[in-house]
Image 1 (cartoon, rainbow, N blue to C red):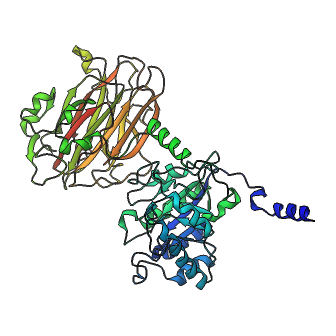
Image 2 (cartoon, rainbow, N blue to C red; image 1 turned 135 degrees about the vertical axis):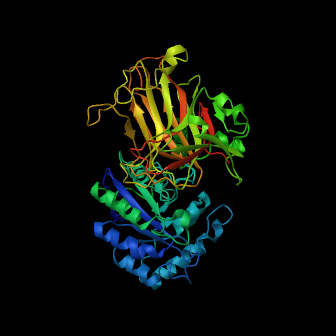
Image 3 (cartoon, rainbow, N blue to C red; image 1 turned 180 degrees about the vertical axis):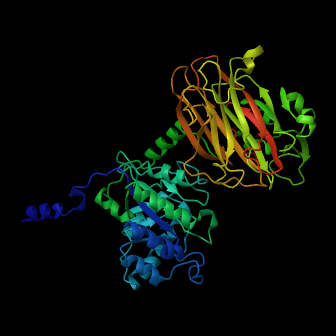
Length: 548
């Protein structure tokens, strides 16, 4: 009889029930901090698409007194009644660390009691407040019935840009689940797509949102319209969207890896080896780029602080000496005391600029700072990297000219980081994109070969009257093979990374000339005077990043 009873109890063990296979496009939606917009904005959008989600509740911040920005418990109860999950985010939103974990039990209990008071089940999921974590808290979480706990994208990625990795069942600890994306105000559709496209091959994308909007925490705010577009994307692309508790259908929450940090370390190693960097680079060591030319990766640098800058650039376009000038910066900041100003007068010139040739490298990074005057209109050409046959004689000019014509793989290729106005649909000066010529480019409608565009999925309008850190990278392809790349960053954030480009068929064809200019034409530019400033130009062999 005891054997039969033991066998019966064994059959009732959840871990023995067959789990569903993890489908592709499985996304978990989570929302932190009890923000009012969870009820007023998020709730109706989720109900519209039939999405489930987990709302992690805390009474921290100004929850008890500020009902303009935070939900009431009756509204939280309504979320539960609608079928959404209510998770635990501690009473006071304390960061759970080696120093504070002993306070965790009372923090969890406080939210549990409130849930019970309002007829909400005891939470079985947890979100680490502030994404602070410690293994010492695992036992306490288990004692409180927590089956799954979500963290941020760290330590695989730095906190800065909200990047993350997909959850890998049986490799990630159930109480240490990574966010595939942690939404920020400067997120765009490309960031969302990057996060959810990881949901394949048995991996699950867990998304972390805060308010939409979030008035008290603007650094994690998501604009209402952008949030609606994210949810529309998930719906149109047929993602399955669930709450964190619903992972039980696919994953045994009791199954824990022997070494939960093993997968984290493997991911960090892979990211360092395979993915492009973001945020600060080696320029962080050189305030305002002072002394940056001494760094071993730097090929060329220009900060306009030393006299005779035009002698350091081999070709200068400065009609009647009225286009290029040096200005003094009154404000202290990321650039130095002196910057280059390009003043284009549509009735007198087409703007101007400078070109510098240099010894190339298999991979090149070009970083510059720019600032558009408030009245600056559309700019036709901007900062261009050109490949020439060599640095000698006529061959050093092979990459110039050829507008409307297709390169043959032996004579030239070029790519330019430019503002594009989308045929005046976007406010001037537009949005950033690549404008590129290479041997496999596509023809335009007129049959000619005008530069092909490489654009992020959802770029932002370029701001005026502020210094912008722009950086782009080009990786030469193996001659004859489509393994070349290009990418660009704005203020240290990766905007687009484009692979599979056959730049060239000749190994002697190398990108070796940089043109910095503001070229205007009356076809696009309607403003009489158009002013653009440049500073802190660097060409290097590795990622440069913003300066301090």
